[in-house]
Structure formats: C-alpha cells, structure tokens
Length: 51
Image 1 (tube, helix red, strand yellow):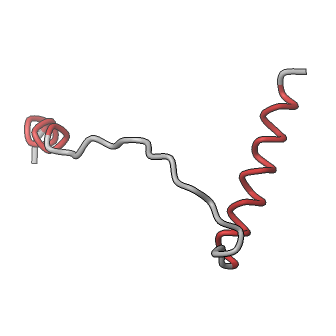
Image 2 (image 1 turned 90 degrees about the vertical axis):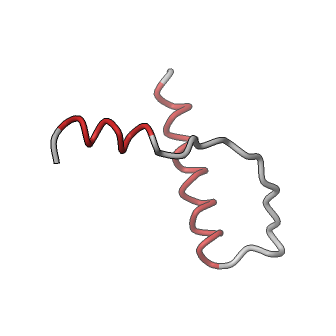
C-alpha cells in the first residue's frame, strides 16, 4: 500500500459535524456524570491558563 492508496482512503472519510445535544442530569448514568466532572475540570484548567 503506497502513498497514493493512503491519499485515496483519506478522501473517502466521512465529514464530521458538530451537533448540540441536550444534557439531562435525570437521564445521566455513571459514565455521563464522570464525563461531566472531567469536562468541568478541563474548562476550569483552560480558563485558568489565561490569567
């Protein structure tokens, strides 16, 4: 598999898109709550970098 084959494969990849989804704490499971904690911690770290 040469470089030309790899280039062809990359052209066939689907294009991703961002979608807004509604988060419901009532419907959240343990993994969702862990993801929420990690996202909030990441946001706090990001906001602290600018100071």
